[in-house]
Length: 252
Ligand SMILES: C[S@@+](CC[C@H](N)C(=O)[O-])C[C@H]1O[C@@H](n2cnc3c(N)ncnc32)[C@H](O)[C@@H]1O
Image (cartoon, rainbow, N blue to C red; front, side):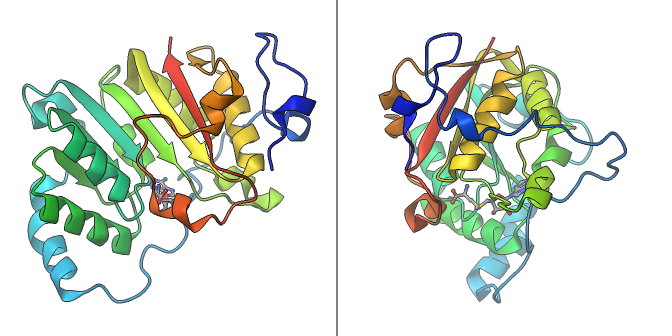
């Protein structure tokens, strides 16, 4: 369990969870081309016929265009543009999109069974404000213009618990820098995990980038699910080693 009371405060006076177990700075080797894979399997069990049909019919309609594009052009008049990195089965993505039909929600997920599940949620809810990138979020992000996002989510990312695999975590200094490039000033980013080491890792990585500020004022801000949080499938599995932690950052 997290024990913020017995760890030293940050300079700001806030407590960094499990600071004593924090890693060094999150760095990526310069010669990593193509980027290290941050996800596991891209397909597991057979995909049900209905979802397979949606991969054929719905996905091509809501897949962002190839090459660089401005997301605002995908839904003219959208109040905001949000990005979810690694939407898994798509429950959170679809629920947030249903709550905010005025917002364009772009989800990225390379796991085909997850994409198929996400399409089912989009189809069942009749959502017109979701676009799905069936691949690596970093590849999608590279095609987006500066300051084109109002919000981003990284929820319960693959923990890659072994030390030699930490470099495969999606939260790395370069991903954080990419997100800083994409988020508008004042935009927000939510990271959540139930893996204590990954919480520390991410807090360190985002805190190391001056473009981000952690918004927490008290332990309750990271211990309790934020009011607008929608429980995710992985969150429900409780596979981690601590209670879910929610880190909300603002883009300076
Ligand atoms: C542990 S699952 C959590 C899924 C979902 N966010 C949830 O909480 O239920 C992490 C997901 O991130 C996806 N993922 C990993 N690396 C990714 C990347 N580079 N771009 C997009 N998705 C990625 C994986 O395929 C996996 O579905």
